[in-house]
Image (cartoon, rainbow, N blue to C red):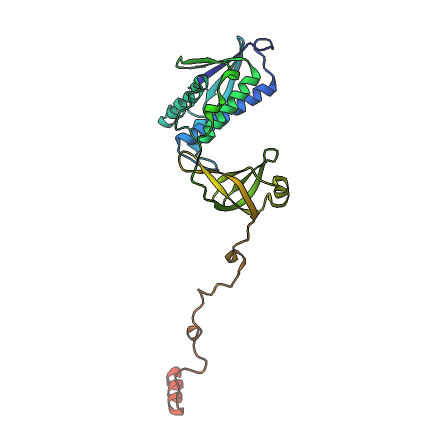
Length: 286
């Protein structure tokens, strides 16, 4: 079983105590980071639930709170799962500790994707709010100690690159994110989400178009792996519904040609009187 102990030190609370707000924030950020690391290991990009093995490997449980100062005991795995150490779970555990350890040295893995980097910063913020000094120890004996407030968040920022100054246009459902900072988001038809930054008239656009299909045209920014991350200063307009979505015709492919749809009522074999009389006699056995 993988277990980590998070010691929160120099707090103003009594040993063994923690506010529910800080507990919820730390627990949420730990689980969020674990989920993102698990999806990273599984090479899952984009929205949607992952396979059960990915979710199981990411699951964390608070199994105890102890004194000295305040210690949170976190176990990995579903509560009803058999205690098997599978290769995938071992890799998730190793990657997770790599991220936790990197928090203390400001050295994120160069291949860490944007969601993992953002999750690491969010965990730092939650820890900083709870305690000035933090020690994290793993079952294997590895241990790191750091002051969250002194750590460099900038090194975790996504390394972005702009591909020239050409403008691109994408279409999808517009979502609201942060009007104060003029940021919206657009989700395309296959679930990719792209941030729209420096949006002019963000409030008016959000009032008219959030929740509807729209197009966004602007200068693209791509991540290290070539994935579209954001569009800067976009022009956002209502997206016309494709004509083929609106048109409706009754399907006719299953119909047979009219000339082959049945027997001709005027067709058939013609009998003269003698042939017809012979036919009736044969039926009667005469």
